[in-house]
Image (cartoon, rainbow, N blue to C red; front, side):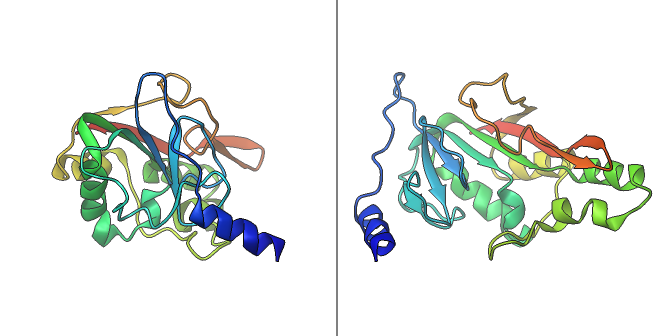
Length: 199
């Protein structure tokens, strides 16, 4: 009963949007348990730090040109590959002119490297390729490499596509899949393709 009351209270009164010193508005799509105080958090699952418990593919709560930065780490692969262009266009819509979309996705080229390095063991890349499948929305529906994602971003109206590095960019003072590696048979393998692009 206490949990239901807390959930209802959160639904009726979600956390206030952060007020950043520079006035910047930053949206973290599919944030999961990550809570950076700079960001407005949107995730399909509820939590005390979630501002909007909502599907990240459609963002009616944000007006056109709302945000300076939209960040999605290991999110786009959960969207059907048939919808990638439409979803990227929606994320672009909420950005201000010259706003930045910052993405991190599993890198298919790195998966192939891991697969070969692990003697063609399919199990070595199964979670990266298909998702952990430990809750209903944790399935992968698309794959990316640099060329493909760069093309999608261009076709969605973005320009100036470039790599970004965790720890070397502003507004990324937290640990997430963008910088993590998979440990397989005592070896560490990076798994992420990190690209950002400008509206």
